[in-house]
Every structure is written in C-alpha cells, then in structure tokens.
Image 1 (cartoon, rainbow, N blue to C red):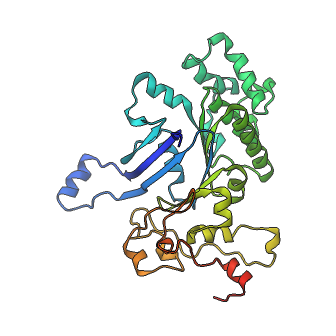
Image 2: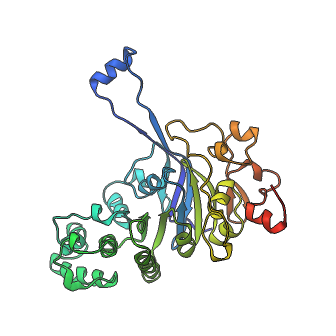
Image 3: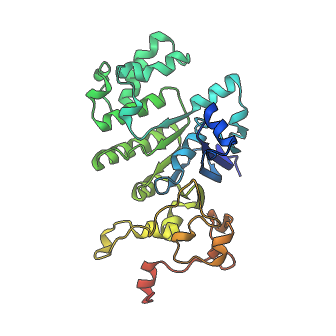
Length: 349
C-alpha cells in the first residue's frame, strides 16, 4: 500500500485548566479539588490517503474540531502521534516545520470571526505569501487577483473589508487565503455550517472543483450527513472522542455496522420515507470530563450488553476497508437489523 499522506496514531488529547499559585496551595492543603480533565480525544487512529476526501462526522462535543486542529498542527497531542508523509510533525524543526505548516491549512466555521475586520481582502489573502516569501512583493497583487477569481470572487472587490461581503463570499475569502500558500491538504472545520443552504451547495461545489484542479486532500468535518455523502470518498464516525466506524462512503450509508451510525442514518430526511417519524438519538451525550466505562455509547445503545459496560471494543475489520468498534460485530461481524430494515422485513421490535 502507498504511504498515507496523514497518519493519526492512537492520539489522545486532554484539556486541563491551568491553576495559579493560590489554587495550587489550596489543592495541596485539601481545600480545593484538582482541575477536571476534559478527555477530548481518546486513542484516535486515522489515515488519510493523498487525494482523498475524508468526511468526519459526529454530534457536537465528540471531538471532531479538536482532531482537525491536532491534524493541522494547531494543538499538541497529549499522547500518540500525527505523521505527515511518514514524519511525526511534532519532531519537525526549522524549514521542515515551516513547510508542514504551510502545506496544511484549515478553513474555519465562522468566516467573519476568522477574518481580520481591520484589513482589506487583498491584505488578508496576500499577507501569508508575502511574509513567507512565496512570491515577490511586487507579484502579490496579481496572485490575489488570481486567487479571488479562482474562488469565484470579483477581483475588483479587492479593496473591500470583510463586513462588506456576504457570508458565502467571506467563506470564499477564507478559502482563497488558505490556497495562497500552495497547500496540498485542507482541514475544513464545519466550513459550511454557518451558511444558507443554497450557499452551502455553491461552496461545496467550489471545494470539489478545487480538489480536482489542484489535487488537494481534504479532511471535511461536518454534522450534515447528506453533504458528507456528496463530497467524501470515505466517512469516519466519531463519538465522545473515539472513532467508532470508518468505511468508504457507500458502505457506511448502505451497510452501517455500529448502532450509533445506524441511529444517525435513520434520521436523514428522504423523499422515499414519507410518514417516517424522525427522532433524535435517545439520551444525551455523556460529559467528556467523566466518560462512561467500556463502550462510550452503551448508555444510549439499544443493543448494549454487559461486556459493553465493562470493556472498550477494539476497532476490527468487518469487511474490506470497513472498520467498526462494537462488541456486536465480534464473531458474527453483523449488527442487528436497523429499524428500517426490520420494517421492510416485516419484523416487529
């Protein structure tokens, strides 16, 4: 097999609130509790091949954005490693570290908060290539015009400020800024969530076209399964800091093997499901400060067994390219039928 562009190897990420001197003294004296630890990522492993679009899906608070920032090098890992082209990015120094930072760019959810409101669009897009010497100072205006045209913006608007653009246009500015340093890997962190539906389609089509034209690799983080199905080659499902299922897009949507994936897919609105009563996944996602023992999903799982409450299920290969972390897949390799499948078979629960 070819070496993956990105390899996330058993990455764990914890967040702990820093304490001042007075708090540390109080803790030692037994007058205060130790700061709580947020378990954002729990031994996450993931590979992204060059030219691939990987959709990362899960409920809010599952660790999607944290994983995206770890992969982009914005956050250090607590344990594990993130490798790019076989090199651990945490060990890169000097020019190698700079090259990695430039080659991996992130597009954020809210374009207004990620763009400097005091700078004109031309300055925003052209700042990084100028500072890093990617193009001579005199060629920056031409590069900015080229990038604006590439993302569907009128170059004549180069002297406007971010607040003078619509939400969709601001996101295009964010994409142009990311492309200005010639990256080959983009992390799209809920990059269409704040946009109107019609504008979402335009931005998604833009990303698809840029991927083809520039040979980009994408980690597309989203909670919208319909969009993920359209853009992704492979889908990774996360729940409370863990990867619970990963497979090519068609396999995930046609043959989901984890109860959480099944629950998510059953609630996607479709024309052929008129009369279907849609419900959210039962229960609330547990706190990452105190995650459940065993399988994190067992408090909400309709198929939970005793072993689910005690032991963490390993990621196992259910079929070619399809991995799942569920005790129900051990031995048989097959989950109970989904509600929709049972209905089609005339089985009542």
